[in-house]
Length: 219
Image (tube, rainbow, N blue to C red; front, side, top):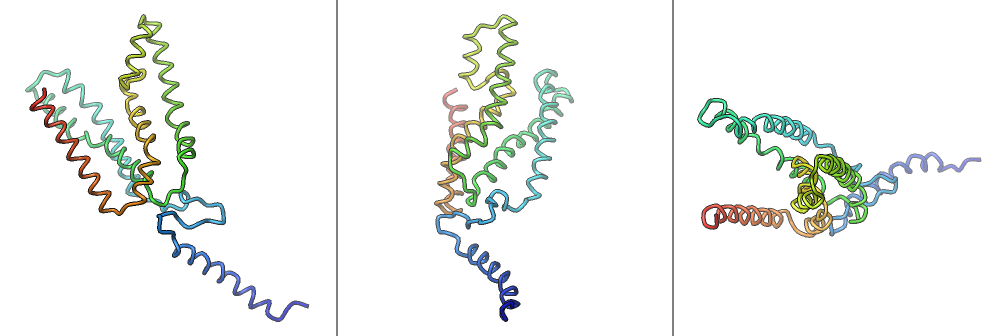
């Protein structure tokens, strides 16, 4: 015969599981790590979708297309013409697009709730960045060698951060950012939002000061 308290057990089981899950969320550890997940779900899959990021990505992609269309007008068309003025204004107004993509990556990858070891992080991004970079570097290097370029000249472009062609610079820059991301995430996790804002402000000010001094005093 079934125990008399079987209906009560059936009713209380889901409530107990729900209460355990809520306590797990509330008892989030002080070091910023997310609550454990027994069902195999990771923090990355539990992150809420942010539609504004999709909108920003679409706008930035469109701005980059416009930027590449307007740059030739600045460098090819004679100055003081209407076409040059339009190209100059359009190029200036769309320069925000590439930094926007970098900041989107930072917003997502520096999330305090992401749990990844440096090795896991590098392994996941290597196939996305290093493999395409190595492939296209090989293609462009082969074409240049067939056109008579020297191996020394090709190596020099690599050391300048321009493997293959200039438009691949973004992959090189992204590789450098990915290299330090796990350590930056550890820093962001250990400090407050105000401290992160102060650090960002200091980096912006010192970078701007470097460019101003280089242009007006050391040029």
